[in-house]
Image 1 (tube, rainbow, N blue to C red):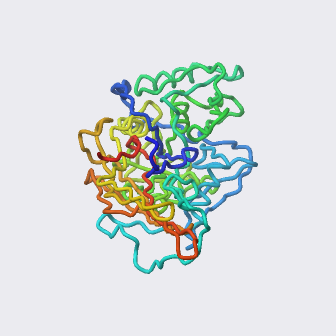
Image 2: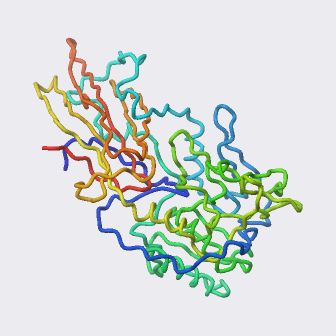
Image 3: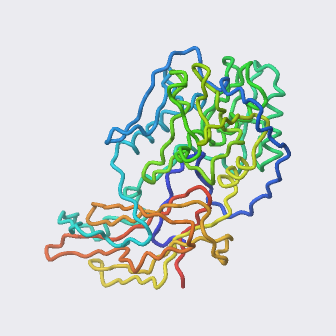
Length: 453
């Protein structure tokens, strides 16, 4: 539908995961995901200390803090590489995205019960626009998009193109790890021919590490001599967009981390990603998964004999690299097989045209979720989502974030003046209106907006 676009898509070049993300907009039927074929052994050791990028290069800790001097993300810079969590390589674009989110003051998040109309205290802008006889803004104008983006991308069509460098020894570690992911999920690994975006399994050093999500072009997954098949499974998780379980923003509800017991050079392995006021460059779902292949154990990266992490009751837990847990598969499905469909809907849509110098559009607006692409069966979202309302006036916008809880399938935004244009007595044109942004996000497929007849 080519009528004025009333919704936005989030910038898909910056996603998260994380445990991330985000998202296709296709409405195709989802493939069936098989049940896990491997039962992880909860007490097996994960050899997590093999999962370190560029161990022979001295790193510089980069602490990204907000304006209140609170640390939001801790990275290690080694040469021109930024490392998150020890074995996750972030591109400069991903790092810059996170920096921008942290540096810019967040806009408030309002609950659905709050007023969705322009908050009091915002005065009409007196700035004149120009003499154009068209609105200064349209809801699909890129200038007014709110940067609610994630740090990584998902692999399109659940397909990872790859190649294995001939220098990698014992390549069965890779093929067995790939086979495990393919047998437990509907991800597909396809040998690359000429595809532009692909993973190359390399053997640069003895350790295990990966880029995060699909970053575009050639990206690497290092399979060092010390990497087991299970370590490769773990790194493939990062390639698909997974973060470590112990850096969940809510991890303090489940575990205790003991910084004094951690090797000083590895403190960044335990930094939380901190869901930053709705910017959502990472996400978690359900409770802490102690059996996740993305989790570390109580004694990994310790500087002495004491544990680096315990459960809240002080008991130990052990990371495993035997296979995907049920939680890993559930998280994958949230990312790559969303079971919900969402769209912005307009009812009582009225376009009022008087002349080139006066027209406006009114409509009742809603955000609704469904369990089918035909939007016939309402269903609550699986993960808390966020939308943005931007109030625009002669080129100046005021944006406000709102939460969509998992307890409702419909949010009523009220009767909105979507656009309004008029010319004053001197012939100067003035435009205002409201734009709604529902970003692509984990757990649902974003459909085009819909105007009810």
